[in-house]
Length: 119
Image (cartoon, rainbow, N blue to C red; front, top):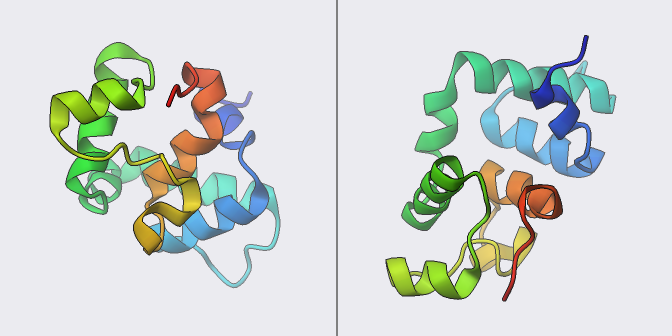
């Protein structure tokens, strides 16, 4: 039986999953299918959740805290007002011109599922 984590990851584009697996350091040469990426990412999240959190910027950590606390993605204007920081998902995978964090890719793909993002 597939868990909620695997079901959620399955909603994400395979290319983004591959990038997330690479970012987490769990991408292996033998991984060539979406299912391989999902298993690797899910295993990392379950066994090393601190590794995911350590890779986040301060605004991303604040966003994660908001999502965990409320179960919803906050409205960007409320996030900016509360944290005096730009909302991390505003530019999706082009966030700040840097390589995206795992959280940004994960939440940007799932935002309609979680609550939707209002600008």
